[in-house]
Length: 551
Image (cartoon, rainbow, N blue to C red; front, side, top):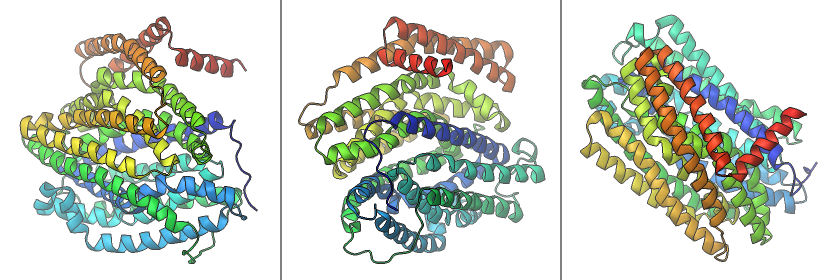
């Protein structure tokens, strides 16, 4: 039966809460996954080789059709539900069939050219015969996950369009659990890196096979777990190959610019990966582990967590409503939703961004102590450098969702070209001008600068699209007040953490104490300062939490 069409009003907060809870658990298990991978492989060449191989499937998926699936097909599915007699069921079946065919062929090609793909991402690894052999083997186990990524995303978008948002956020937990169990088994057999000193020359074929199969199995389980949710929503997959004349062509034209958008973004990422692995190899030779691509990716995972929990969850629930408002020409509703989304998410994003600057080192000492102080502190400095860039990164995400709601995928492409070019140029400057230990931290800092430039450009273009009436005043005032409240909180939190490390040492205990004490100071000072500055959004959020607790 055709699905019931979601109401325009209520349900956004409930959907956001479900998605935020699922994303929180997913990110927390993702943290544990990252910690156990680092404990098993270390943060030197072997860890970088696995990181590059693990990164490949996501990069290829996004370069092919991932960007279009993530951003274009939600509005199209919503329109099919609204306009088609069957509630969009046939459209969804055609889309899923097409994706399975395209990605199946892409997997076969990628596995064959895996050595070239490794070289594309890291010349230092490809130039080392032992590292290259391990990385290519890992890659050939990981690359089939491209297919299951695509299937999972399409199934999730079908559910999202039907107003069911939880499954797409909860099923990645299963992937993390499988990978955690896999690396746990590896550690049980071979020990942690601190005891085994496992490297590209000493890891056994059986060890590589165990990690490769476990990584692939995680995505398989994640994708298959969506099937019960689809059935509960009344959707049963039936392969359909009648792709012509049913709206997929329109979606493909829209996706063209999104694919170019992703291409520009991934091109910047390829430059960063090449330079970070080269800088990391030089730093490791000088005794500074953790300053390469694995350290960059570990810090990036931590840094992106607040964005994924708050901003992505709110906008994923809001995007169908934005799409309907844009389709109906209700510009006032679009403006109100954007302003609300930006200001509400900022309450969490801004203080956490400052918190990363203040507490990056103790946070990484806790998470990655098994890799040793040098590697953990290197990752902490990278996380500090990412820090404040979280603010423009979150704003950019929200603003670009508005363009997609208007079916404008060209503007985000041009905007992302500028961001990617700035990111790549900044990475090159850091590689050339900074010592190898600090080059990757510099790249992390430029990441935020590039997004700040992107926000300014995207905001001006969106204002023109909304007839020049995108009111920046309330949004700017909220962010300014939150930054003013966060600055003293971060300074006092950083001082508290530094004192704790001086007193208790830089091991796990000292790092944990510094993190807990610093976090407590950050939270208390921020709340007091925000209250004095009368941040209305924070007051409303606290009131909502108190009302929930009082029930």
